[in-house]
Length: 113
Image 1 (cartoon, helix red, strand yellow):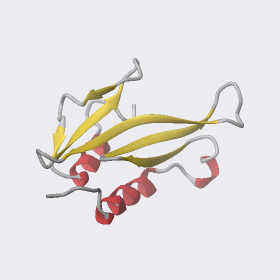
Image 2 (cartoon, helix red, strand yellow):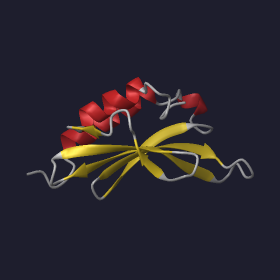
Image 3 (spheres, helix red, strand yellow):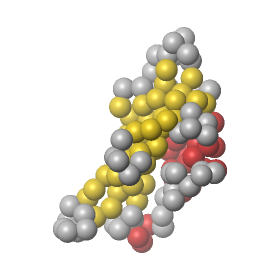
Image 4 (spheres, helix red, strand yellow):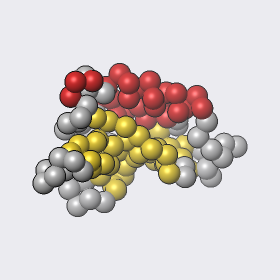
């Protein structure tokens, strides 16, 4: 059974992000990246702070967490209350590629607005 996020899955996330990142000329004002925390992949926006443009803010948008006992991924989005909530239309996906497909489709406008 799987215990870590493997390189193939990381490559899938990086390929997707390279596809959706804004053009280089505006990345100082808006960019998109990801981080891995334990069994979670978190995709976030990078923007200047509205009060001080020298400070960069990382704004979490979407998270998928691997659930080892079920061998699947739970999908979360960050709501206005700044807490993670299960993405009710499709809270579980079998792999990170399906997670990418789900957030790319963004059927309810929860991830990309």
